[in-house]
Length: 343
Image (cartoon, helix red, strand yellow):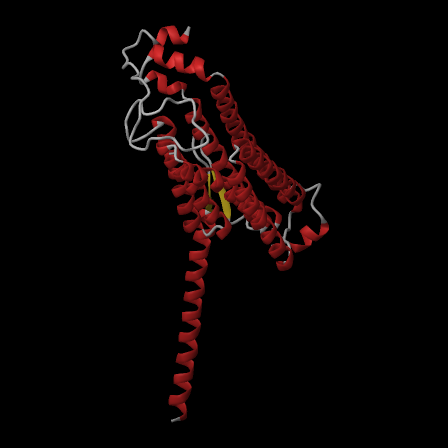
């Protein structure tokens, strides 16, 4: 019914598939979008351009990390996230095997980095070093074995397992360290801030958890929704191509399932990284210094320094400087007066 309605709208007919600037195709994957039907400089134009969201959100994340002093591991993770988007942009534009590796392997490396950030938190240097070596070895094995097999299913399964492991580990860490009924006495004793009203702090922690779970459900739903669309795009490719040609351009662009996969997984992965930043600050007992800025459900969240802590820092700095200057001036004046009296 929708296809019949859209087919009546003004449109541009799809030209036949053709060779382009980067022909021939050397990648092991060629997605449902027809090749070089819009421009000879991009094999899959919609799959290419939808990666610009990755690049934009990566730049936004890097800027936020630098501005607000988030842990370096998240700065590196956002750089990796940007490399994923850039690699995917180049892969879909060219459909060349080397660009396919940049796209797919950067996903593995960034997910391994997040596994390191999650599993190394609070551990000794020896434990962290062993974990790092293990993850580097795993990433190297996946790289070499995938290049040997050249089977996309192997990459997809490896990425899925790594993502599930890091997600559930982060959820576990969040619950046992923040939810009051699960917190250990060691965790409470390690808190450097005095808590005069523990009941109020517990209510605040529960509110933080509710917002975190809202972020997790939102990000995961968007991510899994993208996966569902991607699966339908693969299963019903011939039908979708027929519908696109029936309704023409630009309406057919909205039926590019892999493009929706880029947009939705890009947003879902961004939500995960922002949640990870906020969780890390809470684990470091800095929940009073940072806050989640997420005014509407259709906006991109980010973690920022609380304004009152910045104002307090400036006021305290001014007060300390004023007090020190007054004390020093008083002491110097008293000393000079005593010297003159002796003379």
